[in-house]
Image (tube, rainbow, N blue to C red; front, side):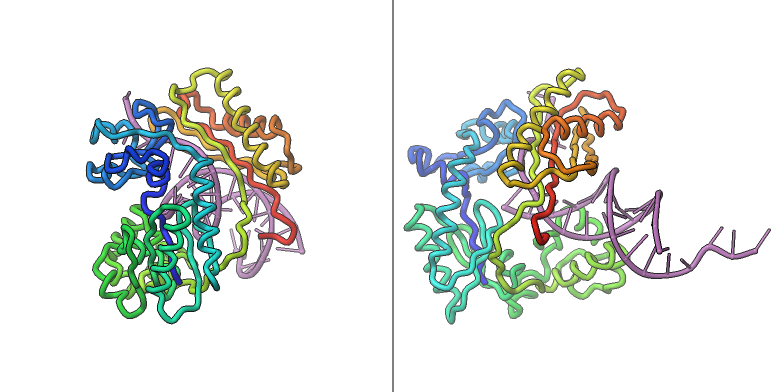
Length: 342
DNA sequence: TCTGGGGTCCTAGGACCC
DNA sequence: TCTGGGGTCCTAGGACCC
């Protein structure tokens, strides 16, 4: 199977409509104002030369490269570009497409020559959208996904059973898809530092640390094992949420009340579009220093009523009994499952 | 004046039931 | 002088990804 990942997607889409910025460090994030509280969504390759990475606060990015061009995130434009990319992949004969996000997808396809197929897909996407992508090829989804990183930019890479240990064996466990810094640290506390060490770890030890499902899952991951068919059944969302980091911390109950009601109103717009009522309300709060917490409450009856959702969220907030200034609020509506479940 | 916004999935542990 | 064991539901919280 193949894993297709667009190169510097947001920045590349912006460059299509602002060709004069080509070759310059471009940073897409927030409202495009590096003095605001917001982070980098995508940095162009030129911007990455300065050490700018996605997830980095815009303020820090501006410090690293004061001459960078900062652009606001423009969702509808990326949405449209993404749809065009996915349609192009689906148009390839025999291709089964599983979308992972705006800018990436697995493509399952029967082919004698996967590298040639990858090159063909790259050419088709470029012709249709003027955008470049990298493609990883693997015998499992995990391997295809990881392979893409070695193909960037604009290239391809093959990662299979045959070269897995050679390519990945000595890399840290955090090079794996699904192992972040926390899991990496917990593995290290078991004496497991590399992918090869994870692959040969004692499964009981992993079960002891991570539980009966996740433990064996991680060992399989270390071996590059996992799903090896692409599933194109359409995604059914479980929940919709809205959250906002306030440029100025919320201090008064009135401000908090208004903010929660606004978030609930926007969440209801989303779930109405989905046609499935809110069954559980999630509240997320970040207080001033840097303490984030979430609370959940199941509703007696599923509802589309924004005030009901807001009241529940405010009740959860009141139960925290914490009157520090609030930096972030999030309201999420977990929806009633569709007929027949997920 | 450090740390977005959209998601998903997993685990632990308490309550409750039979 | 005992209080098992299996199952479900619920909430809190952690972790990861794009």
